[in-house]
Each structure stands twice: as C-alpha cells, then as structure tokens.
Image 1 (tube, chains in turn cyan, purple):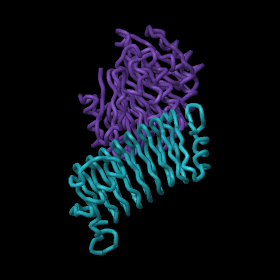
Image 2 (cartoon, rainbow over the protein chains, first blue to last red; image 1 turned 90 degrees about the vertical axis):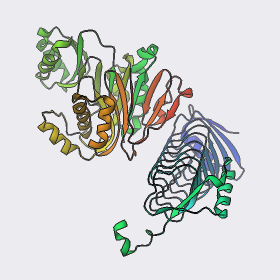
Image 3 (tube, chains in turn blue, purple; image 1 turned 30 degrees about the vertical axis):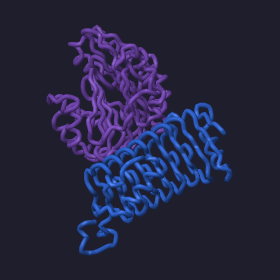
Image 4 (cartoon, each protein chain N blue to C red; image 1 turned 90 degrees about the horizontal axis):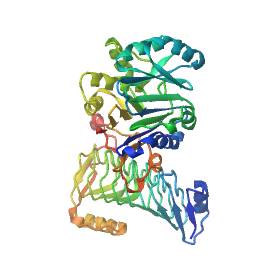
Length: 225
Length: 294
C-alpha cells in the first residue's frame, strides 16, 4: 500500500499518483496532512484513501471514484462538486461542505458549518452532528440527513432536494417548508443511515422540502424574489 | 483574503516561546496574504514604565533625532530596523508620545504598558526576521498577513491597528460602512492615520471601551455598529477576543488546551503548537463574542 507522508512528500506527488491509479482498487495512506489544502482532489478511479489527520480546503473535491476517509476534521469546501464515490470525515467540516455535489455519499460524523450542501445537485450528505446557517441553499436534488440541529434559513430557495433533520431547525429559508414523513421517507432515511454506518431511528426525523412557489417565475410572487 | 493568528498563553512556562510560536503560526499563513505583515506582542509590564512603538520610513535620520528629542524625558530608545521601542516613566507617556510624533516622519504604531507592535510591507518571514520577533517573550499576541483590498499597501495600512492604550486589532474581511463611521468619529475628535476600514473597527472598539464598556461588551456593540465582512482578533493588556460577523464567510478556527488558547484563519496555523493533538478545536460561531482574560 503506497504511503504518502506530506511532511516529506509534496502534495502534488500524492494527487498525481491518485490520478494515475487504474481500476485496481488500490489503497493509499496519507500521513501528516496538518491542514493541507486539496488533499485527494479529482480522484477518478475506484481506490481507498485514508488520511491520518485534519485537512484544509477542498479535500475530496470533484471526487468520482475514491472512497476517502479523513481521520480528523476538514476545512472549507470539503468534497466540493463531488461526482461519486464516498467521502467520510470523522471530525467536523467547515463551511460549504458538499457544495454543488452531483453524486456519491458524503458522511460527516461531527458537525458541519454554514452552507452545507449549498446548490446540491444529487449528492447524499449524512451529518452526525449539526449544520450551520444557509445549508441546502438552492439545493436542486440529492438528500441530506442531519442527526443534530440546523441553523438559520435552512433550504432557502430549495428545488427538489430532500432534507431530513432529527433536531431543531432554527429557521426555514424562503420557500422551504416541513412536509409529512411517510413510509417511503422513513425507508429513505433508514437507507442513508445504513450507508453512512450511523445508528438512529428514522421515525425521529422530520422532512423539509420545497413549497415550489419560487422556482417558476410567477408575477403574483414578484415581491418574494 | 488575509491570514490572522492569535495566541493567549495560560501556562507561564511557555511565555519565553510566545514570539517563536506566533511567528511560526503567521509564516504558515503567508499564502493568505503576501503584501505586508505585522505582530503585536504583550510582554510583562515593567512597574511604573510605559512603552511606545514608533515607526519611520527614514529610520537612520529620524531615530537619531528621536534620541535627542527625548533626552529630557529619561527615555530609553531601542531601535529595531524601521521601528523603535521607547520606554519611559508611565506618567510621562503622553508628552513623550507627542514629542516623538513631532520628529521627522515618525508615526506611533502602539503604546501602553505591555504592547509592542511591529509591522511592515513584505512577507511574514521577512517581517518576523527583520524585527527579531522569534526572540520575544510575552503572555499573548496577535499577528496578521495582509492581502490588501480597502487601502494601499503601506506600513501604516498593515495590521495590527492600535487606537487605544494596549489595544490592537487584526481583521480579515472588509467593512462597508467604515467611511461613514470614520466621519462621525472624526467629528468626535478621533484622529485616523489611514483610509483603512480595519483602523475604523479598532477605533470603534476603543471608543466603546473609553465609554466604559468591557472588551466583550465592546465586541457585542460591534455586531450592531459595523457592517460588512469580518473576523476580528483583538488584544488588550489582559485579554484576547474573537468576533465573526453574522454571515461568517471569513474563516476562523479556535483551539484550546490547558496551556493556551489559539486562533488561526486555518487549522494549518495551529498544527505546530505543542499539544495540538489533544486540543479542543472548533470554529467560532457567527455573531458570537469569544474572549479570554487573565
């Protein structure tokens, strides 16, 4: 298994090796990240990457094939524009985690800061703790499961993403409303929790989504834009 | 962008290493702002003495003249590159300061019983070496590396800004109501050195503390009075405070152990601190005042 010690090896060597990986499901270990930016970005082919510490900006960005585990916390822009694969952070994540993500699974075992899942486009996000303000802003598709609380203006101007929160929501953003939990939704939450390896009762969650009043222009709602 | 760092020591045994620890933290943040850098260190006050840090663009001529101008004040002048630290009997601080400011192009960077401030254009590593900051001891300090947005890249435009005794502020962000606030404070008799927005933030806090508010109360007032983007780290003689605006776009990480409290724009700045592995590490909440005092 290749081991990259970032205290001794340039980050570009690590990312170049990850980009060169074939379809052989390789395993990589990254030591001493010490908050480095752009660790394991743009991983296209299936491989397992274990990062032994905390990372800085943009870890796992554009990930498509990687199964990335960060044994620490992550800075801003975690898994930004992720396309597929899985990114797991054992600690907390800073602002705009999973922004614009298209696919795959992002698991944050701790809490996420503001703007988690902003402009979500199909990625699934499971957060073990709480999320900050303006999360899921303009989220178009994909799902978010939050075991803790949500900050102000959750789901502002949301399209068709689905949000499940177990704790309290400080406030809902414009055009985001609470919706009834049906069996299909509880099954959806159960599936996402199982995929994330987190135990919780799906019956404890509440569902939030779009009231669909904003995303087609209607002159009668001009004041709401 | 800009990078800011702060370190508040609880364990006295670390005090001789404050300058070295803070320097390493600041140099790590170099790529957040390569224009200019500065550092404020709070050292042990000497009983009955005050200190003034001054700067000149023509240090050779101005500091020779400064020594002469201060001959009657029983002052000690220690020159460090473009800056000089004046030590004087505390009751004579105001008149010594006035006499120093009358010399050539000399400007006051900060004054008080404990604070020393060095700042210059250039990379953090250059600024740290130029002023020998690694060798400085102290109880707490803040540092800043600047990517200029609101005013020119000059020594006076660098951070920290000090607008009151033993007070200093570093800022990452940009204020949108600073011109209006500055005009109001000028009418109230406040003197400004620059067109910089962060100087206005520092002066705002000084004005609140002059009005009897504590550091944490003044920071709470800033949430209503200041408009724009900001993460501030503020130092006073006995304390250290952190405040982010309600939107909180500008990054901030705090860490605390039994031995210290540290602030960094990024975790990278904290990664080299002793005991970081066991530290509590978190992001300060938006619109929430954090402060520590000894």
